[in-house]
Length: 250
Image (cartoon, rainbow, N blue to C red; front, top):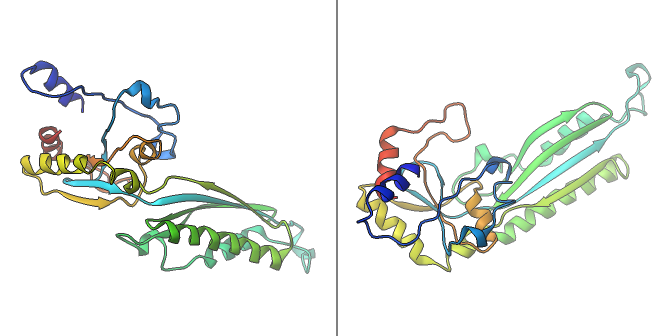
């Protein structure tokens, strides 16, 4: 992005409209645009540079939310535990096993939604399970949220009222609903990629981005390729050749 800006500044003969560039922190925890002032940014439309693999253009995304289950157990000496101990660790394991086994990130692809139990900690006395809920279809997403709520209710009936405390936080919604209002943005990006010799393809991303949040705030923001591979893993990398191609179509 900075090389693109440098190139435009040093070649004033290249025709273009006003170009605004912003860098945001905390994207990975969903806080990237908490203090982003769209009016001050001064753009009618934008692109985020955050889509993995060359030639990908994210025009849709998940509806998303997060469920945090706090499990209240009863700790007592194991030798005196008969009919008294309530093991929060085991209840948390039971809760996770209630989630559909084939609707996990490692078992889904494309437009398939999932439940992702990504954090589990605690002891006999108290445990905590964090679970992401994702689906591209709004109705199916709402059904997933209700499924989570019913699992908490079922465990409270089994182990006693107040055993499971559920805190649900609504997250991002499908950016496609906003992107569809500005189809020319998609056309321009695809044409630019193809002109740079890159095979272009639109897709619904299976994750979040600041662009998704900006769409929800009213700034149309498709997610354009950043060229990296194996995102969010210790094997992540970006080829120099991909970065050179990206500079061309930016």
